[in-house]
Image 1 (cartoon, one colour):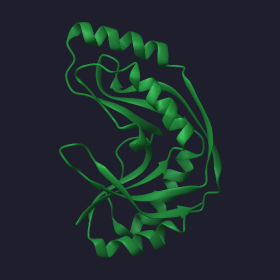
Image 2 (cartoon, rainbow, N blue to C red):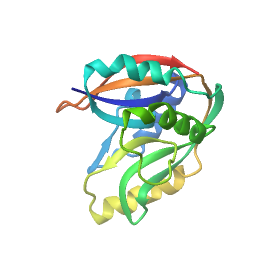
Image 3 (cartoon, helix red, strand yellow):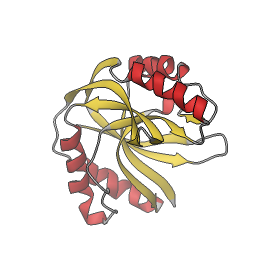
Length: 180
């Protein structure tokens, strides 16, 4: 079994901007995502048998979504500012359509449907535990970054990814890149 997900990769100029933003968030109690690993998850598939890689790749080739411009801007939190678990970067573009298409073409595989409304985002950090002083400092940083603009790029493919969890952090491998 391999752990898998479907993602939109971020281009290098966005990853460079992620690096500079994360420097402002270097607080004890936050687990920053390695900038080269930051991506937009379209769907987490979980553990699948390796024999399903080809059939899933073939299904993903049936996505009906033309390439589109994406805009990466704004920093926010899930689930809410008073109870932060994830710090994210916002993404605008045809991501809802792309997500719906991923769900449509993978329907026959019976993956668990995503809970709630899909929100396109890239995870920057996970909140472990913050003391009150650190939390106040982080809230100030997040207020400064809420309107940050990292720029645009063309989304012209999705990546079918394998995730191997290690004590040092996840290792991602692209199993298949699927053009839109």
